[in-house]
Image (cartoon, rainbow, N blue to C red; front, side, top):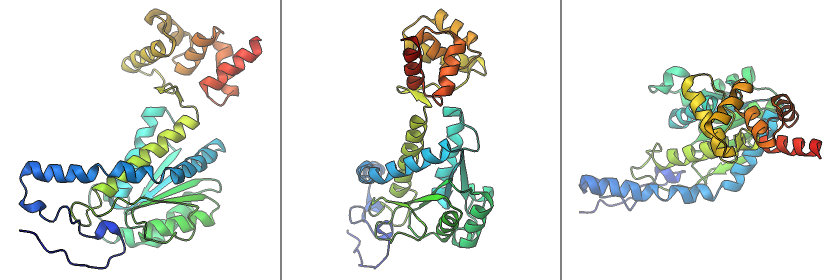
Length: 308
């Protein structure tokens, strides 16, 4: 039996009924999971189509952080929860200051665990948060599956008026670019397996975009060397072991040599790495890193220039 699909006009593709899953409630457990997985496989292509816009957002974020500003995430519901998770994970992953990325969620901390009625409809609350926390030169990235969440749009307009650059990740390519938005990232993931359940494909796309956006920002800021996390500090035995393994991967040297270098560098993995790769002493390595803004490759270039 096939459930008839009615032509109902809605603004966002995520709200329409998916013709591929109208019989999902008649499927076996394996069939349900297969249908959901088939829809999920389309998300990466939808994200790939908006990478030029994501790249602009990354460049805005890098400019803001290099100038001493901050990056703000603004969202409601699933969007806000994903943004809060991304911001929280950057601190231990890349050893960044806790105020580099700040997440603003409609309804506050309580709304992370349970729905808060009408919080996402309060554009004034979003605007007030930006007025209180955003500085000129910051970058503010809003996220909304519908492309029109009032809390998010109110925040972006207020942030723009504060002198911040702004971006919006939207799951609705039909929605017009809102006022106060510098870069619109409108990803088209189409109808959900369950109509309107934007925690599914739309949420997956937002997670992919956030992870790519923040990781690319960290790479551009020199928080990695090659594809290794080299900005972490050895603050306990577990992390010391990890940093020594990273040093071994990056240099090909013995565990003993890497352990000695890390000790000499006071637990600073980057200083130890530049020291080992260049052959310069720890003090010279630290100076080169400072001059290069923390970029290992740039620091190595500086050391080579000085030695030539």
